[in-house]
Amino acid sequence: MMSTLAVNAADRERLLAAYPEVFHRSFMQRWGLAIVAVTVFVYLAFCFSFFNVIPTFVNGNWDRAAIYIQDWYSWRAQPRLRFQNGQVVPQWTSRRQYPEGAAIDWLKPTSNGGYTVLFGGENRLEVTPSQVDVYIDGKLYPVAINGDRASLPAGAPARMEQDDSKVNVRFGFAGQAEIRSNQVYIQRRFLGWANFFFDTHSPFWGRSVTGVAGLVLFGERLDPAQSNASLALDNFLNNGSWQHGDILSKLMQTLVMAFVGTLFATLVAFPLAFVAARNITTSRPMNWGMKRFFDFLRSIDMLIWALFFTRAFGPGPLPGIAAIFFTDTGALGKVYSEALENVDDKQREGVKSVGAAPVIVQRYGVVPQVLPIFISQSLYFWESNTRSATVIGAVGAGGIGLKLLESMKTNADWDKVAYMVLLILLVVFVFDNLSNALRSRVMGKKGH
Image 1: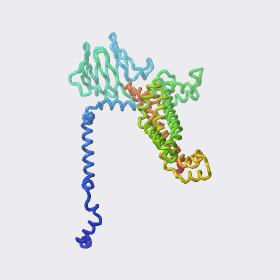
Image 2: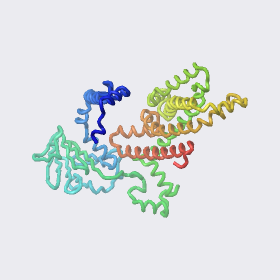
Image 3: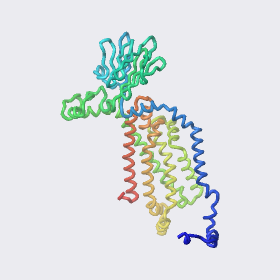
Image 4: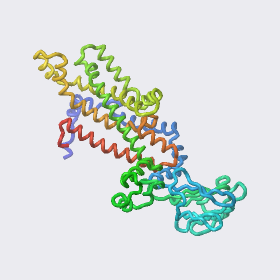
């Protein structure tokens, strides 16, 4: 077998002469891949060093990030137990989760003017104006309050720490407490989204699903002026904590921005693309000028256009529509003109041969060829703009993006942020499938 595979000197010289590029490769052919790999590695190492990637990750506020993630699927009750006139007085944040005077099973008044805060298991706080008794796994750690300072007790576990003049206590997922000289700030966490359907002012608050359904279907009217079903819908949409009506309105505003902006861009780009196409318009200056106009419109990012129009017209959906319109006119104009330059001239010549006017030639010789492509691209841009409209809304162009940014800025409404993100994902999913289905039909792929 070895003898049959051996190549004698004459055959070797013949092969070298016939295929010199195979046996005598250049330096870059032999080492090009290794050089590219080393160059990429050096570039990435430079980027890591220049942008301080590793120190940024190491020094990141991962504890805060974990809290924000927890806020996506849980809620925090945050009373402040203030020390006033020898008493402990609870005060609540603006998103109060309980009605006035409600009996709360984890926050109970005591006979000595204080409060007991239960964190589950053997973890709790006994709060008085002069001392806060911290129980962790059943063991007592008294935090004394003297003057303007709360002092960490000796032998305290790692879950308790002294932070300047205050003491922080962590109870895991159940929550935490910040003990100061004049108050105890409580964060008590529970799974789910509090008061998602009805706020504390609604007569439906605190009722089970079956209880609400029974009232809506069979119960006596809670409000003589309207049915229980109408009242329930009104209470849901005007929920003071979740603001469903406002959020859904902003979501619809975002969808309108995407649709109207894309529609206007399609209507304007369609005729301009015929001017830019070299095989349709024979004037080279007009071709060049229109293509540069398209380049100008699409070279400026949609976000920059949104900032510009927001300064010009103020916040609202009009700047968002204008930003989408300008950007997509440039992008669609380029795509349309390229499609026109690749049409089959035989159809045009056939229509022209019967003496048809130039407009009729384009109508029957060109448009039928490119119309499916035009519609398909416009549908794709419409789908993409549904997502983009959320981003440009965050800079003041209206829609749910602005609402999303407002909730992020509070650092206390991350459950509402999760709610809006899920709504956006749902809308994008629906429009993605709808756009794909329409594009398949337009392109003649009904079976897909």
